[in-house]
Amino acid sequence: MRSSEAQVKAVCREAPPLKVRGRFLTAVVVPVVGPADGTFVGDLDRMLEQSPHFLVNAPLVLDLERADGLATKGAFAALLSMLRDRRLTPIGIEGGQGDQQAAAAAHGLPQLSAGRETPLERRPRAVAPPPPAPAQGQAGRLITEPVRSGQRVMADGDLVVMAPVSSGAELIAEGHIHVHGALRGRALAGVSGDTSARIFCQSLEAELIAIAGLYKTSDDLDPAYAKRRVQVRLEDETLRIDALK
Image (cartoon, rainbow, N blue to C red):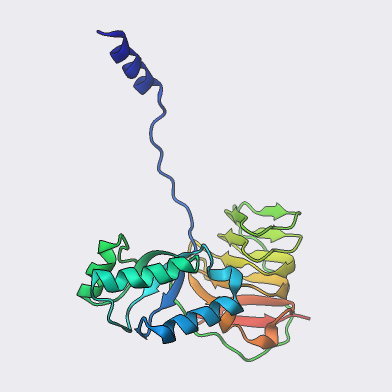
């Protein structure tokens, strides 16, 4: 055996096996209603002005259920170029007709199944229940430093943050999330399907809140709760926000 072949085989024996790991990924769903024309572009630009940190560089899913056109590779290329010019990152589509799905697939965008969306109750409440105790066996995580933009903090159980959470940051927990400061980023509680999970914060300024896959973005949040101490919970598959004293 030649020395070069022996060296290659030796390296192959020493190389560690390939390990595939699962990770939580927050994808933003943007509906394309009607044609992807100037009206759609204007609506998108207004959304970016209102929530500049929410969509930029975030994984984006295009909802084509009510989209017109986009049935050719060229039409889809124009839409993708416009999105990428705005630093938006499409990763897939939802819905759409067969020709739209084929045009998307030609650009490497698969058909995906995104999280559920739910109406948000807008009736203020003034209650102050104690935070639920963590379930037995769940490992909690305590963060004492501010969570900066671009950081992602995950917990197998409850997640407690004793500092502010910046725009562009992300909190992900299988249990409850407690933020003893301003919540300006994204908070996803009960990510393994725990519908009893809750989100608590001292000042609600979030870009996205979600419990067990049901979510709302900053544009959908009632201004009555802005910068207030609140809890977020699920009731009858609806996200509820309760103002706390």
